[in-house]
Structures are given as C-alpha cells and as structure tokens.
Image (cartoon, rainbow, N blue to C red; front, side, top):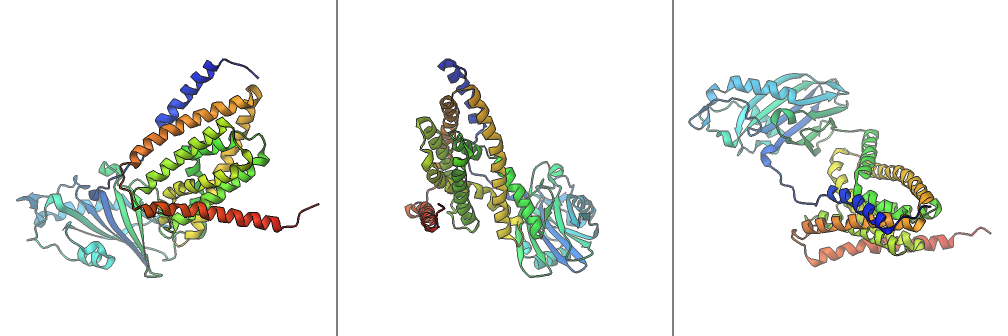
Length: 431
C-alpha cells in the first residue's frame, strides 16, 4: 500500500470528475420538421414489390422544375420529373435476399401538400396514376414529388430490406415514415427510418429479430455511461463475487419488470416521464455513491438495488420502444433478446471492473479505493441531476394521481420479493 497526502487524492478526484460531468447532456424536447418526413409504402405481392414515396420539394430543391407566375409550369415539368425519378431510383435501395432489386417501372408527379391521397396505399397509387391537370396551381413552397417504383421479385416469401440513401444528397438527414404491407395478410406495420440508417429488414424472421435485439442490448449498456456508473457504484465495496450475485440478480429482475411493462405501454406516456426517469437515474447513482462513502450495508444492498433497478428499466425501455418497430411479428422474442443483450453487456463490464478494483486494492487501502471512486461517482451524478432537473422542471406535469401511480412498481417488487422469500423457506434445507 502507498500512503499519499489527502491533497493528492482531492486533486486527482477533481481532474477525474471534470470530463465525466462535461460529457453529460441534459434531456430536452426534440422538434420534428414535417418537411423532412418522407411518407412511403412498401407492398409485397406475388411477383412484384411496390415502393410509393412522397418527398417534400423542400428536400429536392436541386431539381430545376420550371416556375411560371409563382407556380410550377406543369406543361414543361416532364423532363425534370424524369431526372427526379432517376435520382430517387438510386436514393432508395430495396433488396431481396441480399440482392439489390432493379426498378422495372417508374412513375412520378408533382402534388400539392394539401393532397390527402397518401393516407392509404391504394389511394396513393391511384393518385400517381392520374395525369397532372395542367391548369392546377402548385406552389414551390407547398409541393411534393410523388413516385411509384415497381420491382420484379422471385418470391413474396423472400427476405426484403430497404435502405434510404438520401442523407448525403439532400444535405440533411430526412426520415422515412414507412408503412409495410405483405400479400400474406392485410395488416400494416409502420416504421420510422432515418435517412442515414443501415438496411432495415421489413419482415424479419424470429432469429434475425433476436440477433439484432441482443446486439442492441449489448451496445446500449456499453454506451450508457449512467447505467455503467450505477453498476460501478454497486460493485465498488464488494471484495468477493459471492456477495455480488444477489445484488446483480435483483438489478436484473427489477429492470426486466419495468422494461417489459414499458414495451406494453403500461408505463406513463407523457412528455414529462423521460426527463423524470433520467433525473431519477442520476439520483440513484448519487445515493449509491454516498452510501458507499458513509458505509454500505452490503447484506441489504440487493433490496435498494432492486428498487433502483425499476428506474433503470424505464431508462432501458426509452431506447427499446423506439426500436420495437423493427421487431416484426416477434415482440416477445425481441424483448427477451434485448434483455439478454443487456445481461451480456453487464457481464462484460463486470469482467473488466472487478479485476481493476482488485488491482487497485493491491496498491491502495480498501477504504481509500471505495471513498475515492465513490466520490467521483457522487460528484458526476450530482452534476447530472442539476442538468436533468433543469430539463424536467420545464415540462408540463400531469395530474398527481398519475405521478403517484409509479408507486405500484416498488409495491410489485416487494410482493415478488416476499413471495420469493416465502418459497425459499418452504424448500427443504440441506443438513
């Protein structure tokens, strides 16, 4: 062990916590620019696939459609429309079993944004099939370009993917609001795909959905610095893996409860809830870190860990619910897979954290290690709390009864714990 003056540890503490605090960003509202939303349908039929898209002319300003009298000159627009169709042919990549499909038929036309035909696939196709009325007045500031691409396919049972590649061409990242419909059933599944997104499977198999969501869970836990910091605070005081198993199990079971509840929309849905969860996560880190400094009761740490695990489950769900649109028909498979991915990520993190703490304890007294790293975590969490609470207080709060409804989750956890302890006591003990 090495004994250094207290000032050394204080200076090191401040230098360590500064970049962590600066790396955090407060939660805030995100505005959605409707002009950057592309409305689309994909329909798979025997022998054919159809892609129908409406693109705002705000995104296609490079197309030199002739203007006359403050409106598009529709009589002279056909040559430019052909250029637009060629451009957008390369902008949407549709693949069948990994092979890019070639467009066999293209149609396109200018339309006013007031046109309501894109509310359904059939009306959108019928609208594009109609010739443009030359006496129709379409303003450049309130217009869209509608396209219909037809592809020849081998089988309607193939694996189809779509990849929008318009972000670089348009100078911004638009979003594709896609509604997918297969000839197998009449159901319509909606997805929102970023313009710079990798290829998205339109109707994934169960194993493809499972693999993608396992990977999503791993990436989320490894990139979530607040979840990692909470996990670090959990393990700092422990010297043996045996006592840590119950704590990690409690955290896993608790966050699984709220994760699944959020996926089935049983959690609050208001705009206030995400910043509330982010603030509560920061508070959980602060509490655990301060408990480490004061002196933790490791025998009961599993209980407080379970309560905070409920909060972190809501945080995991904030990412998951945005991705469940890509689960296809396998919602439960994707939920379990995402949870498995989180557990794999936690195991990887623990495999790094625990040996690192053991190494630190070889050179520095155990109590110094606990206080030093816990103080870093406490200062970081306090910084995050201030930032996130500032975003939270700007939200419109719901009725008190909705806020109090969150108490049902700790109550449910306590019931599960009580039943579990009762069942354990009924089990025969080994001599």
